[in-house]
Image 1 (tube, rainbow, N blue to C red):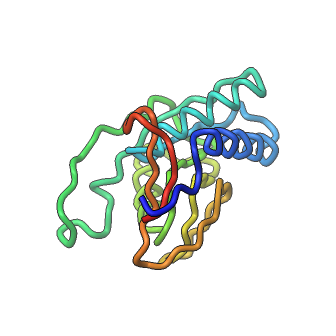
Image 2 (image 1 turned 60 degrees about the horizontal axis):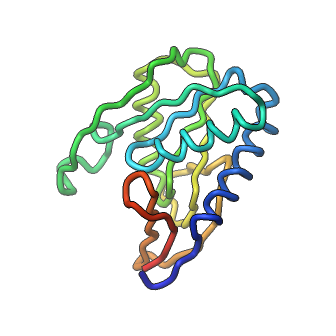
Image 3 (image 1 turned 90 degrees about the vertical axis):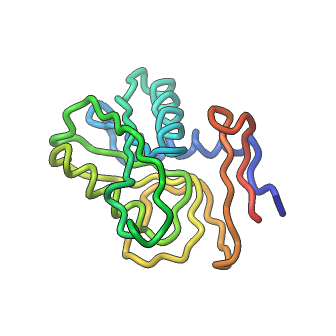
Amino acid sequence: MRKVLMDKDDIKRTLQRMATEIIERNKSVENLIMIGIIRRGDILAKRIAKIIEELTLFHPPTGSLDISLYRDDIGIKKVIEVRKSEIKEDITEKIIVLVDDVIQSGRTVRAAIDAIMDYGRPKAIQLAVLVDRGHRELPIQPDFVGKRIPTSKDEKIIVLLEEIDGKEMVGIE
């Protein structure tokens, strides 16, 4: 790790701010469903939903979304493990807050939007990301951003979360 950009406390404060922004933008949280892109977005979605519950006394439903089969680089990149999406709620006419750890090109989000549409027709899809590192290839911009970290194409943003990695931080290498 070349440099730590956010520690555990920074991540917690950032998610609290993002949850507050989500509440303010949507006025009523009863219509929200938090859906995280597997592998770290789903964890962040659950954390944000918990914070929303602490602030509003309503726990928005959460789900996890695997986008492996919706990617546009199938056959180009090494095949990755397909995991099971878990969306138990009817998403029709709901506001989906799609959560991911890092946004770069926008291709993962495009794949996630395609995957969500297989579950129904939401009223709206909003995007929340912990880190926006730039370098967009598609016209996709997050609605809620934890931290903007301009990077070169050679740099890599690393997000570690307790639930997966046993420690927590955002770094650059």
